[in-house]
Figure (cartoon, helix red, strand yellow):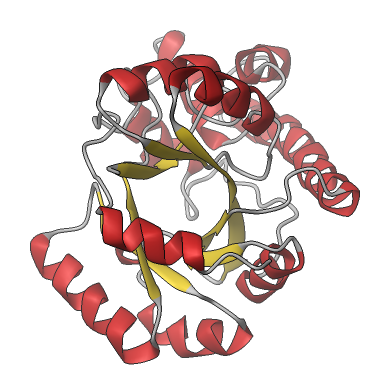
Length: 272
C-alpha cells in the first residue's frame, strides 16, 4: 500500500482540487494518501468522496503552522475527526486571521513601492486558507519578482520587510489539539524547521510521530531522523509535500512513498 501522506490542495496553497489530487494519485499508483492542507480540513470531505470512487484510502488530516522564535514548526495531524464542531471553529479563527494578515502584508508592500491588491491574493486562494505563497504567486504573475523564492527572499521571509505574523497555535497547543481531535500528531519536515532541540519537549507534549521521509530530506537527514524516531519511540511517516506543478516545490505525487508496514503502524495507532 504505497502511501503519500503530505499533499496540499487548492483549499490551502496547492494548485489542484481534492478530486484532481485523488485522480492523479491513483494514476501514480498510490493506494493511500493524506490531504494535509494548512489550517483547514475543508478539502477532506470532497477528497474522501472521490477516493471512494477511485479505490484509494484517504486519511483525514491537516497541517498546523505553529510559531516559534525565528522559524515555523509544522505539525501534521492524521486520522483526525475532521467534522468536530470545536475544531472547525478553531480553524476558522486561524483562517480569518490569515485574511487580516494579507491586508497587512499588502500595506507593507505599498510602503516599499510594490502595489498589489489584497483582493487579487484572496481570489487566488479562492475559498482556501490564504498564505504567503499566494502573495508570492501574485508578485510573480505581475512580474515584480522572477520566482516564488525571490518573492520570499525579498519580501515575505521572517526577516524580510513585508513579513507579518498571524495568529497561530504553539507547537504544543497544535499537538494537544490534534490529540483532542482523536488524531496522531507528527512533526513535519523537521530538517526544514531546524529545531531538533525542541523534540524532547514536543514528545512530552504528546508528539507521536516524525516525518522522516520527505522530498527535501537528504539521505543523511533521513538516517538522522530515523535515529531520533527510534530514540523516542516515534512513528515514522513520509510524504512528498506536493503542491502542484508551477509552484516553488518541484515534486510529484508519490515522489516520496511510505512503505506498507510503516503505514500500517500509523493506522494501528489511531485513537479509537
